[in-house]
Length: 345
Ligand code: PMP
Image (cartoon, rainbow, N blue to C red; front, side, top):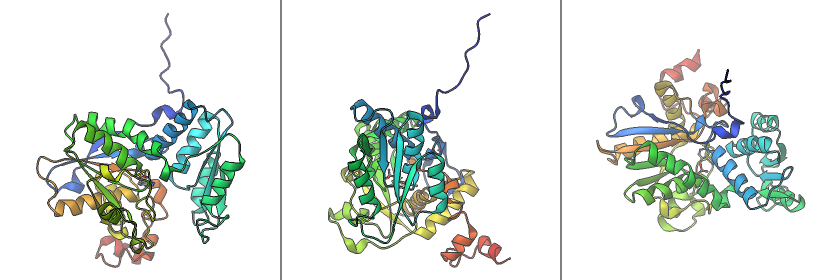
C-alpha cells in the first residue's frame, strides 16, 4: 500500500511571510470605507522583522558573504534581534546582538534563549563612545572574520525584503483594490518596500507613514531637513527615529502623521478587546493614525484601507498591557474609564 506523505514543514523559516489580511470591524465602526489589517504577528517570530532577517541573510549567502558557522551581528534588543536569532539557529550561524542596558531583562533573556550572544552596553554613553552598542557592534564586525553587520537602518535590503514579499502579498490579497496603505515607520523598510511595489502596480495608491511625537521623520519628509528640535523622549518602541535612516524611501511616502504615546497605547488595548487581535504598541499607533485620518476626511465609502500590524501583544505585557505601567505613565489620568477605576481596587 502506498504510504501517505507526512505533511510537515522542513523548519520554522518556511512559515515566514504570507501573513493573513483580516477585516477590521468594530474598531473602525464609525469610519467610512473598508479596513483590513496585515497581521504580521502570524510570522513564526511574531513580527514583520522575520521577513528582513531571512531576506538579508539569504542575500548574503547568495553573494558568498556567509558560510556555515559565520556570524550575524546587529544592534537591537527588539523584534529584529529575535528574528535574526531564530534564522541563525536554523541556518547554523552565530548571532551576536549588542543591546543597550536600557533593554528589559525579559528581552535579553529571550534573545539568549534563542541562542544569541548578547552584549549589554551602557545606555548613557554617546553613539561614538567605544562602549556604545553601535561601536561595540562595529568593532566585533571588524574583529570577527566571516561576520556580517545587518545595520537595518542603513541597509537597502531592508526595503527590498518588503518590495519582494509584503507588497506583492497585499496586492494579491486585495485583488488590486487597495486605495490606502497606512504603516509605521521606524527603519522605514516596511513602508518603503511595500509602497514601492504597490505604487508600481497603481500610482494612485496613497501611502501614509505613522511617526511619533519626538521623532524627526515627518518634518524631514516635509522639508528634507534634519531638525534636531523635533527630538525628545517618547515611549513607543519601533516607531519614529532621531536620525534619518537610508532604509526609508521618503519619495514613496505621500505624507506622515504623528500619534501620541498615550492614544496609541489605549488604541492597542482597544484592538485586542474589540477585534480579538492581541497586537503590539505600534499596531495601536497605526490605528490611532487611521482614526485621526478618518476625522480629517481622508477616507470615503469606496476606500479600501490596508494597515500593517507589525507585531504581537505578548512583547508588551510589562508595558501597555500592564495596568500598573499605564497608570505610572499617567495614561489613565485623562480617561474617565472603567480601567482607571479598576486599578483603585
Ligand atoms: N513596529 C515595531 C514593533 C517595530 O519593531 C518596528 C521596527 N523598528 C516597526 C514598527 C517599524 O518597521 P520598520 O522598521 O520597517 O519601519
